[in-house]
Amino acid sequence: METVSGRPGTLRPEDWLMVRPEGLYCSPGDFFIDPTRPVPRAVVTHGHGDHARAGHGRVLATAETLAIMARRYGADFAASTQALAYGEGLAVGDARVRLAPAGHILGSAQAVLEHGGQRIVVSGDYKRRHDPTCPPFEPVPCDVFVTEATFALPVFRHPDDRHEVARLIDTHRRNPDRTLVVGVYALGKCQRLLCLLREAGYDRPVHIHGALEGLCDLYREHGIELGPLLPATVADKQALAGSIVLAPPGAIADRWARRLADPIVAMASGWMGVRQRARQRGVELPLVISDHADWDELLATLRDVGAPRVWVTHGREEALVHAARGMGIDARALALVGFEEDES
Image (cartoon, helix red, strand yellow):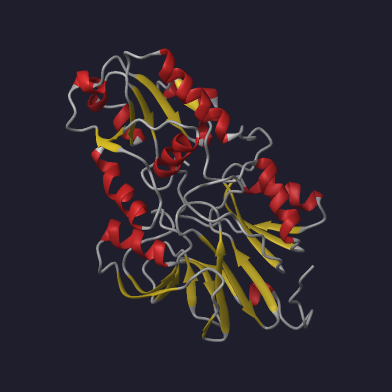
């Protein structure tokens, strides 16, 4: 296996990548990764709001992530930006940075940092499943792997996405006079579900809530084909009968959804594997479709990257640290703050 540790004992990883109030700080490069507060220089792994914030000085990210940030925050979301393609290396101060695919959403990346003969990979959020909207996760051998832990409990074992989409299409087919409204996170889940529907052969127009239109347009501008879409906001009740409607999770619970024809409420989220959550949200058709690695995929990733040290960030840190130590890995929790539990 590839290794970069050339001078064991001369430098500790925690001497050059550390937790500060703003977030993870790379001292030789003088930049933060996914900082939660405005900083002079940031490397951003992907466009979700708890990782990509406006107000930084310089931002380094994939071109797709920069485009997402500009669409959400406006063109002046940072003083300056620099796009880095997957696999392209760049010297930043005394550190070297490159980005590797994370398989999470369009433009998502792992930050691969090298300094002093060591390599640390900060994975951001990631998954190992097929996703038509982005390149698959690339395991990068490293000395330290920094991993999320959103679904880091053995109870979280997600079913095959194709099985969940088949359930969605079958429910729609068996209820031709009802509107099937699906709650989806606006960035990533919406576009991925549309692509999965098309791959499953569903070629009819899908109605989308107005809050989803801008990011669907952006995905199309980056070559992601989503099939025929129609606005749900302007369609009347009768026009939506027998249709699939995608809407933000918040919209399916408020009076916006009351205008739909005898709706069947569905939700596409990794959290739908928890029955109590589905019941609390009034979800009739829970679809376990996640943009995060499940328990088995987290453990497989630790094996694949082969890092002797693992640092665990947001989520169920204690469970993953315990499991990693059982695999003979030196693991610890970083206890980063500011990362939210999303609908992925």
